Amino acid sequence: MSRRSFVFRVNKHGSGTRNFDQDETIVKDPQRAAKLAAEASGILAWCVRGALAYQRDGLDLPASVRQARDDYKGDMDVLSEWLDECCEIGPDYVESNTRLWRSWEFWAQGSGMLRMVPSGKTLGRRLTARGFNPVRDVSGLRGRGLQGVRVRPAEGLR
Image 1 (cartoon, helix red, strand yellow):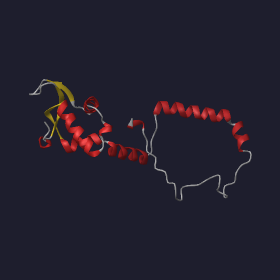
Image 2 (image 1 turned 30 degrees about the vertical axis):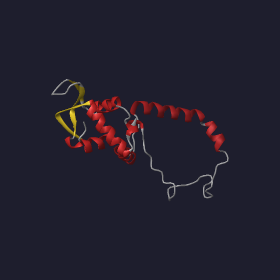
Image 3 (image 1 turned 90 degrees about the vertical axis):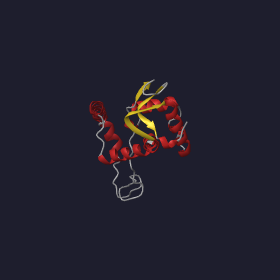
């Protein structure tokens, strides 16, 4: 979803804001509606060309919008925060789904983020999407788990 989300900063109060309906310095064209109606086919053609270019090339977002989106994604990435605080990452690590879920559940309840990843199944899908590989009955693990991550030993989870 975040790849379709954009953050636009809007300056509500400042020199860049104008209310065109209330600005007395703007000369309004009383024939504007008639002029636009006369150009309707050209305006429609412009819209269609723009839609086709969007389908072909996508949006070319300004750097400020890309930066705002990336900042927002970083702020909302609670899974990374949990991984940094409660887990260790390494190619030889293997952890059971149960221990991963218990660690996440404990951490997420304490930080009010459990609704972001509300089940063990969702957690597994999210971690798999990050590149951790699902495994079964390997490296002393009985049952299902993930390779590449483990709960920090200091977590003390059973």
